Figure 1 (cartoon, rainbow, N blue to C red):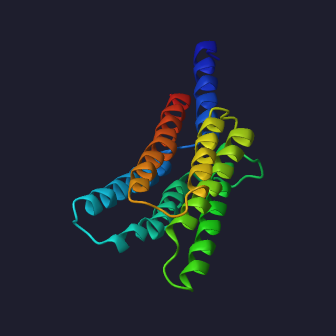
Figure 2 (cartoon, rainbow, N blue to C red):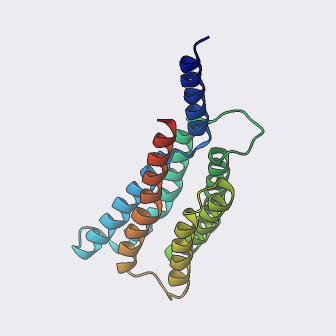
Figure 3 (cartoon, rainbow, N blue to C red):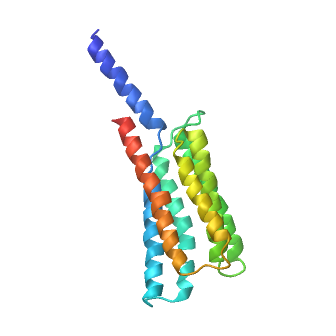
Length: 195
């Protein structure tokens, strides 16, 4: 029995356990980064007349596709357990967000192209709830600030009579600051916990 070796083994097991219950934010980085580039690109296409105005709705199906891809990629961290870990809470909340947004867009799509302003309101409200749930149940209290950001955007877009091209810039900044940035922070925290 070597006490030093035993201590190193215990520390390694503790680090592995901390990493197992943490949230890996790579899917948020993928989702937020891609949507930020897409909405910023749509703004530039409209301003420089590179595309037509009806392109402004294209970010909506991308929200679903990229969220689904992010959840698929995040599923590699899945572990069978009855314990509610932050990682499981993350998957459950973002799966519910995917379902909520999908049902809304499909229902709107049955009557033509989904209304971009209504879609923005649904996305903002859904993400506000998701981040508030993660903050309260996942132990990441700083995510309340991200939830507040989505709530502010919800108020901003709810007060608008219709979407304007400048809103694509607001949306690009929101996806970068309220999805990509928290994803980066969660990834760095996850790596530090596993180190």
